[in-house]
Image (tube, rainbow, N blue to C red; front, top):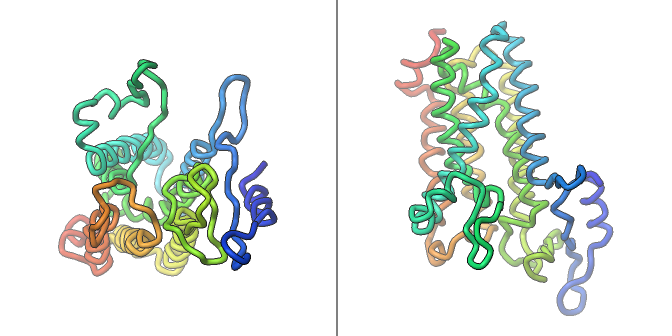
Length: 298
C-alpha cells in the first residue's frame, strides 16, 4: 500500500478522542515494513531514504546538464553525498544527543548493532541520525568532492542546496511511518494518535517538517529558474540553510524533546544546533566575504 493510500485510509479512520467527541483525530499505526522480498523486509524509513536520494540524484543530474558540466564530474557525487550524510548524521546523533553512552560503546556508534543484555550482539539498524550532523558531514564530503573533480566549491554547494529539501522531506515522511520524533500532546483537529507510542493526540511534527521542506524545495527551484546566474555565489546554499533550520527552530516547539536532558531548557538541542546554520545561511545569502572569495567571479 502506498503512503498516500495509508494517509487516506487513516484519515477515513479518524476517531473521536476525549470527552464529548470534541474533535476528530487521526489514528496512526501503519506497519513499519513497506514490503518483503522473501526473508528480507524493506522498511518504510529505508525506502523513503532511498527515494529521497534518488530524487536528489535525478535532479542534480538535470542541473549538471543544464550547466554543461561533464558526466565525469557528476558521477562521483552520489557516493560522496551518501557517505557524508550517513556518517555525519550518525556521529551527530551519538555525540550531540547520547555522548555518555556511545563514547563508551564506540563499536555501536559506527556499526548498526547493539549489545543487548541477555541477547548479545543484535542487528538494530542505525537507531539515531541527526540532521545537523548530516549537514556538517555533507559539507565536508562536498569539499573533498569539489577538490577531486575540480569544480568551484560554491557552485557545488549551491547545486546541492537546490535539491536537498526533497531528500529532507522524504526522510521526515520515513519518520512519520515509524511513529518517531513525535509531537507534543494537543487538541488540534488534525492531531495524530500514534498508537505505538500512546493514545494521546499529538502534533504530527514529522509531517509539519516534511511539508515545510517540500515548500522550501519549490522556493529554491523558483529562484534558480529565474536567477540561474547566482549559482556559484553561495546564495542558494545560504537560502537552503536559512529556510530549513529556521523552520526547524519553529517546528521544534511542537515536538517532544528527544532526550531527557532537554527538559526545562528554553531551547532544546535541535534548536540550539540550528542557530549557527541560520546565521551561516544569512551570511551566504548576503554575499559574505568568504563566499565572494570562494565563489565564482561573476
